[in-house]
View 1 (cartoon, rainbow, N blue to C red):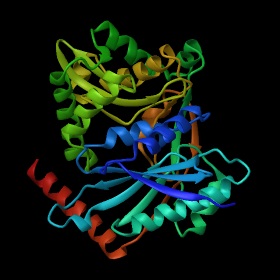
View 2: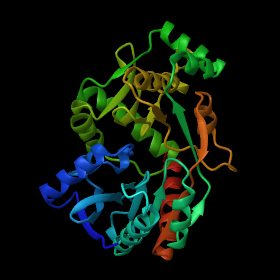
View 3: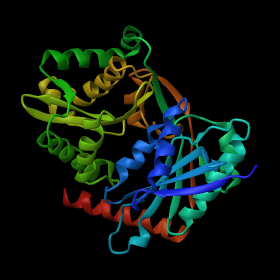
Length: 351
């Protein structure tokens, strides 16, 4: 079977005919992850530090498959070549079921070649397990590690409430009684309050790179205001106490992309922002006809992880989707690890 390949780059002026073809292809597909949809490609245009690469497979000038990777630059600014990585989230969209594995092999081989030019490493993060893809990725010299994800079936409100851990039910009821509300972001001022919470969380606790404020601002204008996502905010007495960034695919899946809440600071007030945000996002999915709430990761199964323990209290199914990494520049990859460890030690020292 003769296939042709075509690459679209969000940082370059794309062929409108090609992007229109991809949009039709994605809209007609049965199930597409937001992180593989043309909507993400559009969103990444203009986001500093992010660049979407969308690889198309064509047969007789018709799109039969796509794979999207994000080219991300986060790290030491003194040398841009040291901080570039490629991230593939979700599974490729493939129409040709008969030759699915051959098409995927073509896609993963080509995107790896493209990423090798500059990227320190390439990481593939599927949402759900797919044994047929796993063998192909490993054949392309990617290293596999077990990694869990948690998926909630949005079938029935009462079933979901019954599955909610008793401690979380109490915290939801108590938060509501004490006046905590969760609602979509309504202004840039509210958004700035949420971003400050994100900034503090990632700087002082998570200690990993995070997007700039412009990323969240673009999400508000390009996704929420265009009904492609929602930013849920936890508010109490006029203050923003937390938020959750939720892109979605209508009728399919709503995702927990970024979340942060001032929980410890507000136990004394009898309110629990992160609990309310998570339950409210699940309710939002129910109310708007989504089938699945995707927690976007739950850690390694053999490593204790408090975040996973928190997420499991909301019900859902744990799946081992795995993660795959191809290290293109081993020495630089190790150096980046040292860089972030040293940087974080300075953050801790300055607290």
